[in-house]
Image (tube, rainbow, N blue to C red; front, side, top):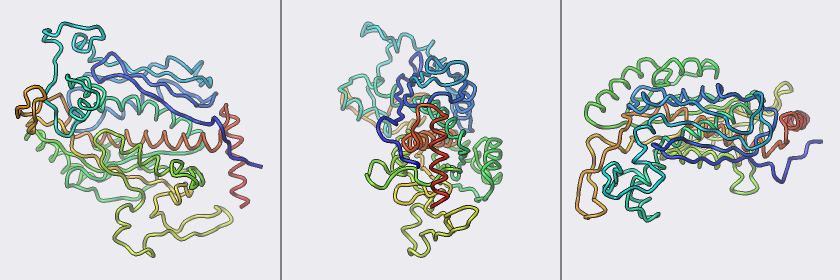
Length: 397
């Protein structure tokens, strides 16, 4: 008989490092042993994150490649913490500015920042941590940090792939231009979006989006958008209704909104549900001997009661335009309290395609974490046995 695992069946990660520091570091704990894992599988996701029309010059400098420095031997995880390192190639130009050792205050190479940029963490972080040089805030708050999170998500995807779970993403809106939606199998969606510089399935909308990005760049402005992630093959019952912090859709929502510049998240038909009557929102339940219980529709986006239904998970996130503008907004110098135009750091015009990849991977992590909690097991073999026992229980229900 299947029994849900309790106790230390937890998976977590921590990241460290600054955008212009020597490296980004991640440590993953709780991944089962004997999972096939290579640097190439992680680098595939890192490369996807760096692509996309509208990216800035930083992506021409950095060619992200991971080093696995712990927890993997001979191509498989050992059960020990997995340590990942991604070097910052741009570090060579910042050795003085980002020096660990103390430097003279008069040294111009320090590049102290005293003019907070609207829309960034600069001012809030300076107030919270009592930092008079706002570089100490922006270096960690930068979206460069998502490199480490994508690396962790890539490891999570490897685990999910062992159980036939597939993840795809697409851009559905940039600025005021929205794609014409097309239903297609998830494998086809992956193929089509990988060929698009904006990760869209609509060539006509893509052309208009590229023109809008070019126009925004010419005017020193930026563009945001909406991205969507679809996950297929997830079993019913991941997450739980019994406590608020075990609801998997809630965990995914937190993960998505934690991505830099993300301001909202929805599942299934999302906010449209607020406009419709209940009869047009909820998904009817059916049963067939060859597939078990299923839903006649998937307006809920794969979740009911904080748990997966077995239908595809559908999540959308909205990314605001990047806050760093080449025509900077009004700000105030924290030293003089005089008004100034905010300082400018190198930036992208539009990072929505990259955001789609980031969202895929933070969602992958949360699903994998729930998977480990549900099925436990110190080894992949033990986890698979628990999974198969549970799926047999579901089939007999």
